[in-house]
Image 1: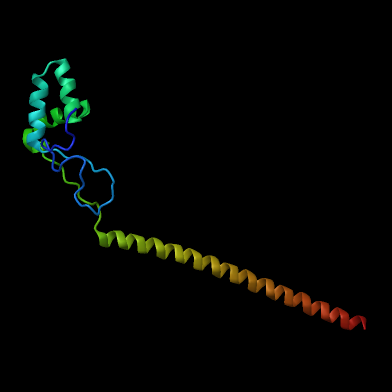
Image 2: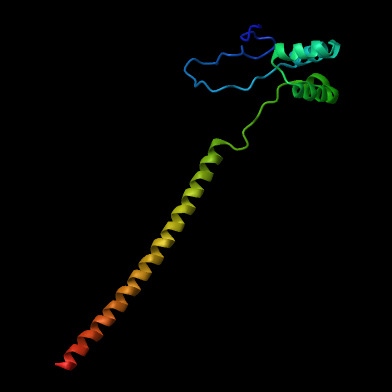
Length: 142
């Protein structure tokens, strides 16, 4: 059985988290460009049985090899470097979007409340008219 806590070209040992207080959520593994090239070299030199053993030992998938080969062919080390994901929006833009959505929701609720008040007002006026006509009918009968 192999040691799963080894680093072997990974940014951080597998099976450990960067902070003891962080949640126990799994983290995506990242690989250095040098590690990827070394694995590709070893994979290309291995026979069929050796390739499977290498993948099991390093806990890799054939899709890793395919992607890394494509990257190597397209631009060697530069293409193999870890890709940093940048957030699409700044925190201020996210907050603005949240506030706009809240404002739109409140505007819809206000319009709905105004419409309901208008209906209640018209119903009240109608009931007053009916009440007045009923009172005048009773006075005529007496």
